Image (cartoon, rainbow, N blue to C red):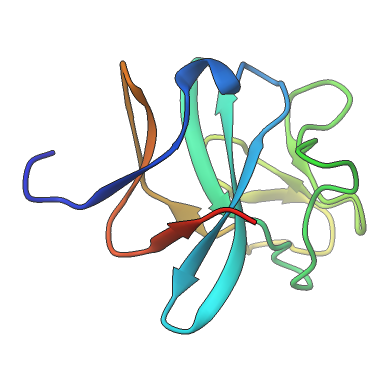
Length: 122
């Protein structure tokens, strides 16, 4: 990924399949937006932490994004279900919408956000 800007989010071991995600923020222009990274089927995925139905954060409990069966990401406010690998809504009031994906790169030394978004932690 030479020539592409990356910023480290976390250690690879900080996220596990169906486990808690790591929360962080991205700066887009002048907006500080909540985001998270999770692991599903051994792959790291990152999204803005905003329900597609109404822009509220998905997790009520810090970092808990998966439903009880660890199959889907769930909005704790509306019950909307999202496919972890794509962010597509599969059930709930967000029908035909989805989460905003962030590009990540996973390497031996960690999980990184790719692109021009500025990364920050609270």
